[in-house]
Amino acid sequence: MERPELIKDGKRLDGRGLKDIRPIRIDAGVLKEAVGSAYVEWGGNRVVAGVFGPRECIPRHETDPYKARLKIRYTMTPFCSKGEHSRSGPNRRSIEISKVMREAFEPVVLTKQFPKSQIEVYVEVLQAEGGTRVASLTAAAVALADAGIPMKDMVSGIAVGKLEGELVVDLGKDEDNFGESDIPMAVTHKDKKIVLMQMDGLLTKEELAQ
Image 1: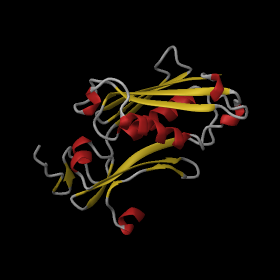
Image 2: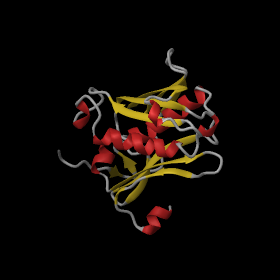
Image 3: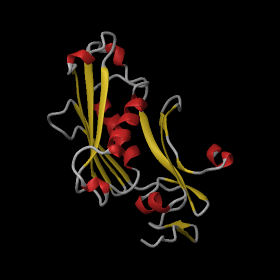
């Protein structure tokens, strides 16, 4: 595929400025059978999250007598996009994102209030257009809040990247594929603590500081 011109006359492929984010819509309480749930539209991304628990830990040998186990599963539907996601079942990417999402929420969710139990979060990407991990993390946070799971703070995410030597926010699909770098990150709202930060590509120290 030929590489597109990602920035022209100060505008990106979809007409956004360098610091503009795509339209976002968030709905809570969308799943009847879940304790808490959320649906997120973020640009062309469509994500649904459901929370179950606290409930008995299964398998029982994983029970922690002092706190709840937080389990997060991120998956992409076979029809959400082209490429590796068209295969059913978990793949390396979904396993990795499930892990980093769990690590992002573990310092925030008050798991010690629910010993000997587990809290499960299921996130399903229905349609993908770049930035699914931060959209999914945001959906999971809203679903946890909708479930009444106590948290120290609310969490939300955004991706920052570099295109044609310029720093931009909220990368779309082609920007993610052809850009020079991609940094998905998530922070807490009150204390601005970074709970997730990854980098694919290269940035200078000065660019990272921005």
